[in-house]
Each structure stands twice: as structure tokens, then as C-alpha cells.
Length: 233
Image 1: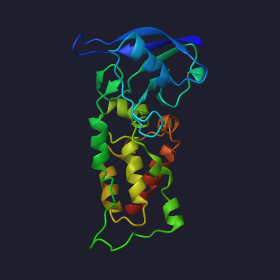
Image 2 (image 1 turned 180 degrees about the vertical axis):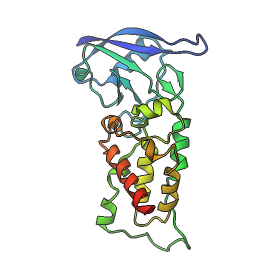
Image 3 (image 1 turned 120 degrees about the vertical axis):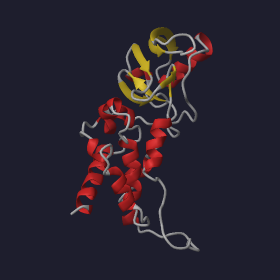
């Protein structure tokens, strides 16, 4: 058992308009995750600490936060990889509601705007829509998204332009644009051809680095850009 210092950015709009840093000494085991340390703070040191978490296994994406300046899932990152003093703050680019809790609605607005569902014409089929393994593999990478917002809130463009769709919305559009069963690719491409769409990306690779599922986010964005170029030629 060792002690680490969690330096957490605190904010409670009911008490003050100003955020502040608060440090906690937390006992940890070698295999503990950051989420375990945050639970210790909330359960034993300060019950007012607020953050999201649900499955605790890297599937739901609820506990994305900024850890030592980098977006990570608290349930996946290990304390032993973070050092003796760990800074924890809310995701950048989204309004902070309280402590590490951010308002996800702007993120979900962008997600909904790209029509993230299968678009087809005609009557519903009487059996499953079949697809070859090769066609399925074309968009396999972008099906892995857990909508944690880590990629979008790691993007410097998104930090300064809250109208930008952001990497995750483009990733979700990619998942359907390249689905052989879908008929809405042209509509989605036109949505992303907007001035706040795919062309705002500056290819910094922050999004790819931040993705906890290892999605090649920047590659997906470039593929959507190329699809738009070919669409308009």
C-alpha cells in the first residue's frame, strides 16, 4: 500500500463561480485504477465529489476525464502509470456542471446531427439485411466507439469552436457512410461539408491518442474528406 496525491479541479456553481484545486492523499494498491482512487475520495474523504461512472470496465464511456493533461477513462488507466501526484479535471470544451461532471448535450447534439442510424428506402425486409465480411470490415474500426467524448474534447478546434461537429460525430458518420446497406451517405456527406464540418479538422492526432478503444479517428476523418472530394468531382 502506498500513498498518492490526487489534485482534483473542483467546481460547485451553488457555492462559487470560481473553480479551485483540492488535493487528497489516497492509499492505493499497485493494480488500482484511477477510478478506485476517486471512489476512495468520494466514499471516505469528501462525499461531495461529483463524477460520472457506470460499468467500470471501459465499455460505457461514462468516466472520461482529463488526467495529467490527457483525456482518459478513469476505469482503464492504472495509478502506477500516472506517478505520485495526479491531476484530474473535467473534459475541456464542454460546460462543467460540477467538479468532474460535464454537460454532454452539445456532444450529443453533434452526434444526432449526422443521422447515426441506418437509412434505407422501400419496405422493411422480411429477413436480416445481409452483408459480406469484406463489406463489414470496411467500417469495423468506427463501430467500436463508446461515445465517451474523449476524442472530441481532446480536439483544439472543438475547444475554441463549439459549433464544430467534432471527431466523434465524424467517426459515427463514417460508420454509416461506408456501410454497404445504407443509402444515406450522400446526405451525411453534405452535412459534414458544412463550414463547421469535416474541413475544420487540422489533423493534430489528439483524437486518435485520446480514444480508449484504439480507433484510428484521424484516419476515419481523412477517409470522409476523401469521400467528399470524390463526391463533388
